Structures are given as C-alpha cells and as structure tokens.
Length: 457
Image 1: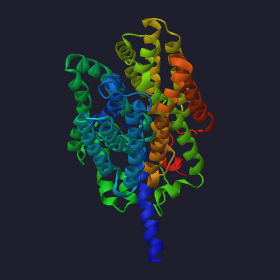
Image 2: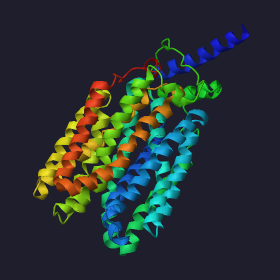
Image 3: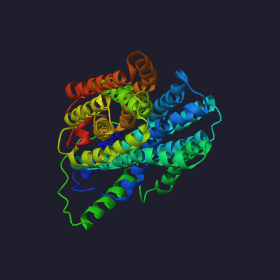
Image 4: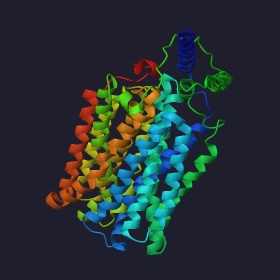
C-alpha cells in the first residue's frame, strides 16, 4: 500500500508540473534563453555550410578528387549520427542541459582541430570530432525549447532558435568569401573553420539563471522541488508582464523511464512515429546536404564563374525562411507546412537547374534557402511526438539517424554528376525533396497546439 501511495504521489506531482506548464499564456523565461539556445543552432548550421564554402579550396589544397571530396563530408555526418544518438540518449538520464554542454565542448574542440588539419585524413578525423557535437546540439536544443514552452507557443519557441541557424547558414558563405579572398591561400579556410570554436561561449549561460533544466525532466527524475521552484519563477515572470494565469486544467502524468529509451520507442504507438520521422529526415537531409555541400561545385561544373558569390546572395533566403517559419509554425499544422516548404525547395532547385544567367540562379537559390529553413517545422514536429522520458532519444533517431541520408548523398551526387551532369544532379535533389514531403504529409500526425502529455499517449 505504501508503494502504491508513493506511486500515486509521484504521478500527482508529474501531472501538476505538466498542468502548470500547459496553462502559461506566454513564455516564462527571459529572452536570453532564445539567444543562448539559438547560438547552438547558429554555430551548428554555420559549420554545416562551412564545408561547402571551403570545399573548392580544400580540393586544390589537398588535391582531392572523386571519393576524396566526399570523405570529410561523410565522416562528419556519420559522427553526427553517433553524437546525436549517444548524447541524446544520455540526456534522457543526466538531463538536457548537461548533455548540451558536452556537445558544445565537442563542437568547439572539433572546430579548432579542423582548422589545424594537414592532410585529407586529419581533415576527415577532425570533422568527425566536430560532427559528434553538431548532431547532439540540434536534437538537444529542440528538446529543451519544446519542454520549456507552453503548447500554443511551442512551435514558435523552436522556430525562433532555428532562425539563428538560418543566420549561421547565411553568414557562412559571406564570411568564407571574405576570408578566403583576403587572407593567404592556406590561412583563410582555416580561419573559417576556427570561428566555429566560438560556440564555447554558450557554456557560460548554461545555468539555472539563463537556461534551466527542463521541469518536465526534473519531476520525472524525482526532483520535484527544483521543478516547482522553476515553475514559480516562470509564473512570476509571466505575471510581471501583465498576464493573468488561468487555473491549471487537469493533466495526465507521463510514465517514468523503465527501460532503455530506444526500447520505449520501438513499440506502439511510437514505432510508427519513429519510422515516419526517420524517413522524413533521411530524404530531407539527403537533399539538404547535397545542396549545401555541393552547390558551388555544381555551379562551377555548369560554367558559372562567380558561383560562390551568386549562391551567397541567394542564401539570404535562409533569413526569410527562418522568419517565415516563426510566423507560420503555430498557425498551420506542422506536417502541412513542412510539406509546403518542400514544394518551395523543389521550385527553387528547378530554377537553378534551368538557369543560364545570374537572375534565375539567384531567384532559385533564394527559394531553396527558404526551404532549407524547413527544419524549424520538422524539429518542432519530431520533438512533440515522443514522451518526455524518451524525447531526446526520439529526436536523435529522427534527426540524428536521419543524417544517414546526408552521409550517403556525397556518393549519389558524385555519381549523378558523372552520369547526368550538374543539371541532372539538381533533378535528383528535387526527387529527394518530393519523397520527404510525401512522407510527412501522408504519414505524420497532427501536433500543433496539443499538450505534450496528450501527444505522448
């Protein structure tokens, strides 16, 4: 009887925390949390684009050709998969914030080491170190924002942070263009990578004052006092902004973690969700990494002399896509908006493939940049459809293992370039996007605005 009473008391505490979070009419934390967590996206997306910017220089510097061109991209993405899965699974045990701190350290160390590369082998190894941190940062940052946000603003919370990823994507080509042009040949590309080490600054803000641990995670791990104290602070912050808090609505308690997080997800109702998000991300990343890593190379093969400049101008679409995601993410259902973004990407890449001058090329790159920011929609969806006890692991399986698509795409691009030429290779990218859009549209569930507790059932 005592055990049953203890279980009931724990369930009541968990349900109470969920209900208090769900009733918040506004974000309960300082805007600094968006800057700090957003910085994780900025440096991760910056680093993703940095390899594409520097690849033409690295090709000459290390005399790369064929499969060698794919090696640093592939090792980075395979390490991304490992880092996302291992650190995100760890986050379901030790907490989201600690795991995020580990990922920041790995990303920063990898950036410094990559800048010191002396051969294609060292470059590939150090890109792998960077990848270990990159994968976990995206999954954990989305998990943190999802669990700290009230239901009706949850998508916007994720999108505001992913917007900073768009800033990183847009900034990297301009930074790379300037540094590679102005600095000596063997210095510029190194500085491009080394700047990624500034991510270490994020560690200063990973504390209870700025980026607290998830109260949902805290209460599930027997730390209800800390969860209640954090919620008291969040509610005080909301009231200070002039909001009136409604009475908490009855909420259900989520189950505790009783086995390895992945096993929790490989049974109904989560198995079908795992399959959908994995396939969605697999084909999305196959297309996105092919575009980001090889756009300058494909344009060069099309005879475009100012390929890096034109793609950099078009990449301003990243900013528009990021802002657009913030505006629409809580207005439309996630799966519908993610599929619509895919259509925009297909149109953009088609314009690039058909272009014979800068006008159409820049317009296509701009539309493709808007599509590239669709991960804001996908991250929100993926982080919502799994229970708190295994949410970080679910993100890692969808987003992390989904990077297998990104890992194999260099070989598809290289083979496509040889068989179909650059324009035909853009056609392959369009096909990849079409498959991803169909998967999320027909296989996804409705999520926008529902409580996490309800979605976790």
